[in-house]
Picture (cartoon, rainbow, N blue to C red):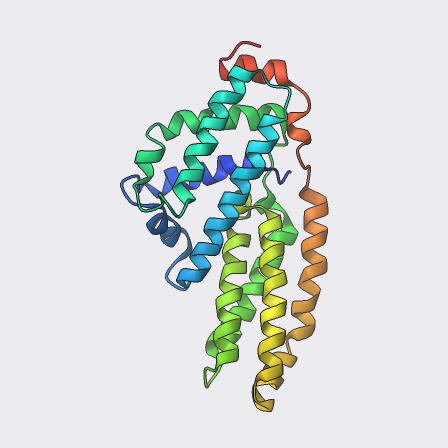
Length: 245
């Protein structure tokens, strides 16, 4: 099991393919993954996390032992994916950036299978259990009556955390950790400025939310292989991808 920018990029490509919305833009595709509960700001956060994975994949490939020919094809795919999530070109259809998405997926699937563990972060029991707990807390805030500024803030950030956990194989556990950190800050600030009755509702579940950080760190330690995926096996990967060394 691993959490690596190469496999994360691979899984973003897979999500785009399985959406079966090649003539729609990236915003529509992300909406289809996540549902209508996400605000526009939350969708843009996911854009940023996808761009982060593209940047890290670019660096991993660039500094790898692969031949320049092998790097060029892979980097071209990453650049095309980056364009999908770039503010300047995100309104274009997915197919205009990735006209041959199957071949792009094949190259990254070969690379990931040669270098890395074929397991997935989403198969981690801790991820599944944490996701269900976050979902339960989200429902508690959704069912709160009356709805307040505090409940709206909680729902907004919990929905992003849920999305990153549900699609952790694409966005990476590091993105979930970043969302969690922002959740803590926003909830704490909102609680301090809210009416006493509102703060009490959050106080009851606050200990559980605080424990999520330790659990996310444990998951990250279990799945994180960094860029070791590209340190060995270069010759075999180049052969399988179809490039010479």
